[in-house]
Length: 451
Ligand code: SAH
Ligand code: SF4
Image 1 (cartoon, rainbow, N blue to C red):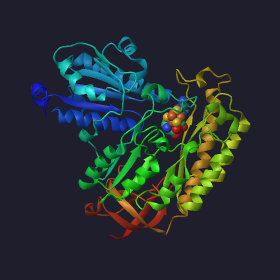
Image 2 (cartoon, rainbow, N blue to C red):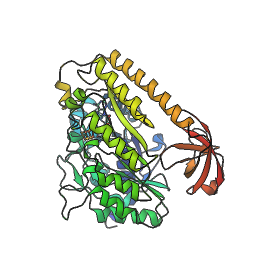
Image 3 (cartoon, rainbow, N blue to C red):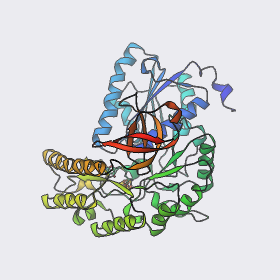
Image 4 (cartoon, rainbow, N blue to C red):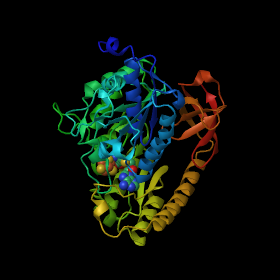
């Protein structure tokens, strides 16, 4: 609390609005920034027009995400013209990559900082309101995991994201993550257990462990640690009901992890195992370090050991040099695996990555056609899998009101399927038995049969 008196004359009155783009990691970073700021005495607002500072937390994974962040920043230019007292900050992966160049592109931005500078935020704001103009703060290589989770401000009171590692060492040829998030580093197991223990004590039922490749968790740690052992320890935490994790790189999926999913009661029957392509030639150029055969073997082991496990993945369409035949092979694998869900993307050229220098880039129109075909196939598979679930009875953790229909409640099965149902608010945060009554492409409907 020592910092609080120093800045209290700015705080309380200063309102901050955070606009987040991109993945769960970014959303969790925003939760951490929000928590940190609230701890320091600032207040958060969800009304942008009333904010003293607007922070844009950008994502660089695909060009479209990056453009969205810049176009949102562009909208703020007018707001700043009308109210010159407002401060605008830009952070996240795009900021980390572009650094002070962003000041040239968007002269109305006051504050720029990188993915490794989140904990400096209260100090930067203090300087900003002391009159310092154009603050720009970037760290290039992390010394260790940043540690500010104690001040996280989470929206949900039922499920929480918990970072277990940051950065990535894999350098898949299309991916910008290692350049903007730095080298891989793992958080100490005791630290993670402490955070999850606190969450469980304050009523959280579910945690999702976050890392770019959770399967390499603990590498090089002293004393040694690994992901399956972490799952076994978390499984013992009283009050916690469900443990999920993302993302699992197929090359590092071990038998110990498969056994941990099978043996740890709280670890959910779901794995997100991104395939990226069904062609060995493309996988090689992507630098994914597994073949389709090895991937399919791991899927069959998972399904043998954990019957009913649901499987989701990511696919990139139109990677440089991807032929029609390569793409057909991807469709064949999708048909063979029958994913419960897929995130599919058109290949997006990213600065710095080795794929951007590869020959034979695929025209946009071809990428779009391939994506469309892939999504049509996956939608059919999703509809078929979901319709097979009608009449089944399953435990569902009720998370709150449905965003699509606020008169209904929404929850998830252990296999991560969304179920919407009628019910009263008393069951929010509880796991209830639900009979599935109807299936849609992306979700299910059900009725509570036992609370
Ligand atoms: N660490 C995770 C993925 C993080 S990025 C993993 O290895 O699985 C999430 C997804 O975005 C990736 O799985 C990939 O499918 C997609 N993606 C990453 N870079 C991309 C690019 N340049 N173009 C299109 N999709 C990309
Ligand atoms: Fe990107 Fe590959 Fe690392 Fe995932 S494993 S973050 S796709 S480099």
